[in-house]
Image (cartoon, rainbow, N blue to C red):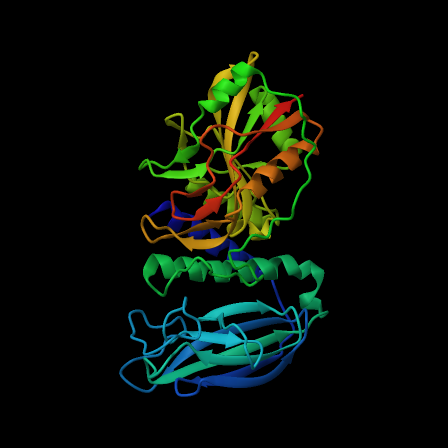
Length: 405
């Protein structure tokens, strides 16, 4: 079993525990979705804040059964309404005109952000790949009801995000559909940059000439175990290991798990105890011919599966005036993408990687543990490249150099 599979077992287990703890007022209706009808109008008028739970079972009348998750390998005769989902999958849209379809599959949960009208359909173009359709149960939890109160929001969001994330994972791992880089979560994430600009107090004092020479000799990018070049080196921290760890802890950065089996147990136990699991495992990358010394991440606990700020850091083979030097590569995960090396599902990064460099600097500067920050442009800077999984990114090429107190 791959490390990704182990991780997703944990996610499904967390999802199950979270779901079992919820109850909601029953406002249910059942609809029949046919393979011969483009869209079925549920007549449900939805309001902002509503939560819609949808589950489907197949209803078949011929040799080829319909499957709400779609039919792997089925041919299509045109452009599918939802290209990154399998042919014949159950989909929905929230407006009658010009609405982007949403993948439903066997089950999903939608969080309504504005007044909407629910339509259900099958992801087909031309002749349907099966005979029959789906029996679809729709449960509406109105905004403001007891089961849709703030105390329930965390569990509902977790369930919805894991459900969507699981579909992307299954599509990539088991061929249930296409896994594209724009696979969206229910919160509207579409793989675009969402980072807010940050403000840094930058020192104009020049760096020591010997230190600049060492920085000039740094590798510009990290690599994976197959020596595929990946993320760029984009920040440097000067200080002892204790200073480094204390500053990162003060800035609410969490050490990432390195053992996926341990991650399964941690996620299960912390969910059972109603705590937040904030140590999603991080893959191993290499700099100075060795794996990272530490991996750190920061994210909302609900969104950790799909979206997180994170970086890897290595102790440099040189010092600055007797102080240890740490070299880091930071990126912001914003969704899911296909790993170009093996077609598995991996995280998609925000291509504007300078935003994560500034986020790291800002988070540390706010703690008061940083004496000064400065930018340094090395020779042959990285400005446009791809990481080891095939995601493109761009940068102004500068290093953010931080001196700890």
